[in-house]
Length: 225
Image (cartoon, rainbow, N blue to C red; front, side):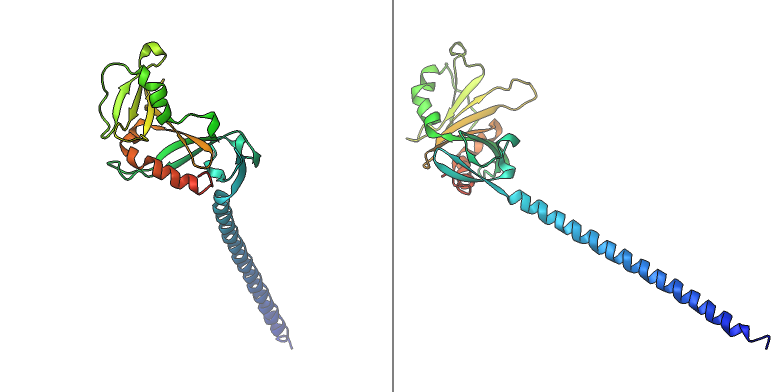
């Protein structure tokens, strides 16, 4: 009879073991669920980021509706739908004719064409009468002419294609800060009734033959052509 309690003790020990195993199983299950949740959230975050980069804002400029990706806007305060007088964008393009084709960052201001004169028009109407003596070399296919200091131009050079009836023209200026690159401006009239003012580093000038086509391809995607 004294031995009779032993089975009860064995049952109690087995119960504790089963209880502990059940607890461990629950903990493992909770950890697995938590890990799966983290993976799912990470995937959702990645999807949201990708989707956000593709979000567009519709703006109307000069009667033209443009669907502009949010990532193209230079200034956050311009990221609103509706009618606007102009919009300032920034994008990258590849110019294959550069010796080392790398993405070139170009700032773009879009506005009604009545508010901007094309660089090719300015060449004959303004720049030609302000050319200084001498020629600046360094860009194959383009003629570089410095502008007169006395006319209000300081360290500015006009680069143009002298062989084309509708020439590529860009005006480049020395930087205000010594460690900054020279910057160039080029204005074109678009067939949509808009004008585009391009800003880019002078290092991109050797790729001028590809420039307008590359920019047109980008602007076409938002409806600016």
